[in-house]
Length: 564
Picture 1: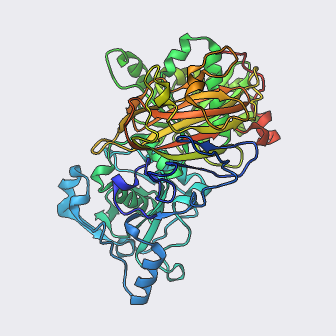
Picture 2: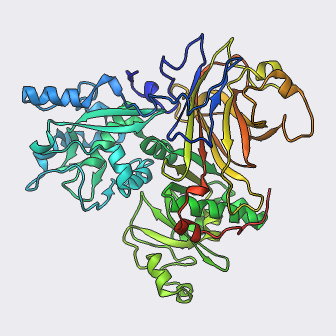
Picture 3: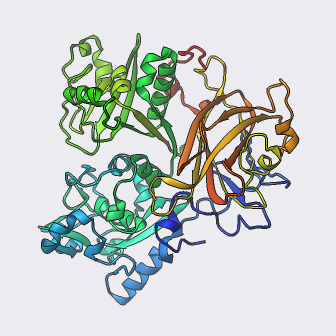
């Protein structure tokens, strides 16, 4: 199936293709990036036989779909044969597609291809120097942290910006470029290279290297996906991370509250961040919205050098022993000079007690990228929320269920005591076998994320109030019936072991679970019965047995006592 529309057709919670859903068969399919006998996945919308994901993998899981059915290679070949440069009919050089606040520039604006204004050097798509990129101050920059993460990872960059293109004849230049985004599935979007230019420079995103153009062209492709440059405004930073990497999101809210709780809760989060950082996941931190209650704390953060209106990216996490927990953050959207004067600032005397080898490893002398170290306690105090985008890699494992709630089939809702309808909901089975060595109870860790289709004309709301529950089941169990939910006994089964805090109408809900090894059933549902909608349920399972010895040595084991 190919994507044939704009934003509504390609948003993250896109509907499944016709070969995996219908009104007469299972409205869900599952896929995993690796066939592993330790993990099984089954989804049961009603009374139907179950199947393991490794036995029936989703053959289309990695298939790239095309927005507006525009195939890059076909279009490029046609342009080369006709000896003309590509002009995109779906996203023409029209000032009406620009941001409204750019109207004052229209009289001085031209739409030009890079080779028409880059002099004397020739334009390039990706520079070997990787000097980063700049944005115009005042323009919306919610996706800049994600762009920065992509720029600093060769694997991510090659995934989003395919290497089979460029500006030279050897690279078959024809004025057309293609980029890939994750909107529930990987979508390929082509654009021509005509950019809005003022005084010889791109109006919006641009590289610090004047000859490099992947940031400007990627931004144009992103604007095409949303519908215009104007519609590219005011999304959440984590949206950019998900859509540029395909990662599974995890959100931790109310960080300052951890300072008044049992210290083991803060320690648990620290070591989760440490592991996520070591594995190359994208970690974002944002401050609280300015209110009467947060005004003083934000003012104090500003006095210490934090730019509270910007999102920060966590680039390193370090445990120095004896309770010394450090976080390195980087302001991706604002000034690059470091203004931090709080604990562990660049000239803080605390560094005198750190060995030269460790300081060299932590790159304490490197601040050109705008990053700096701060105490973990200050991180919790001044930031409100942390978002982790867990990427697919060789250590952990992701599994995905594409599904749909349909009236008369599996839209059972989650009303209290209505076990008959509730048992009709989709049932997604997973197996957790890999215990966290730092967990004193020997539990396994996973992040579960549920996405749904966006409500029209809304950037945050979904079509339904949705959530999920998790149940421990016996190894031979393949389907949960009405009797399972109605039956009560104190045997560890028949009761919910984890769930979303609420059934809410956001586009995405996620929780981290720490559960004993075994088989589990995840049941995604709408709050009310008979509400239709598409969903994507993803499970990111942490696989500690695959970590290298070096990774394990850098993270203290059994460092946290049992805490619930």
